[in-house]
Length: 170
View 1 (cartoon, rainbow, N blue to C red):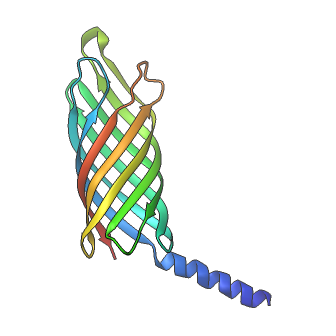
View 2 (cartoon, rainbow, N blue to C red):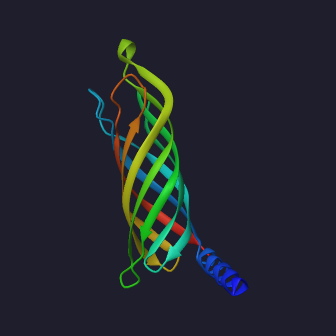
């Protein structure tokens, strides 16, 4: 009986692992730093996700991403890693997802004596929507993130909105 139960557990684990999906994405976004005299900042975002676990309609895994917003006297270069959860209804080609990420951010804001710089721990909450446009290609319709950088000396909580493409690897 123990042997049958052990084999059943192994089969279940390998079936779930066989459904693992890797996606590589690139996007372009705009970020509101919410700082005085700083306009919206623009830049690229790129990353890779791995949906390691999957049951019908739901996938869970990890996301590793970097974004590089702004230039000159207003920059936020961030690198994040964290869990992701994606709904995958097979009836429609829309796949909403949510992520809770942690990482580091290099921030430069302001000029002269009002300049703030630092590389600090940061975290982000992300929500988005992917639309399948080809069998292995999705349009990342929207990717919204709210970020908080710790111990920077200023209240720095940028919000970012991006759009781009995702290629899901076989």
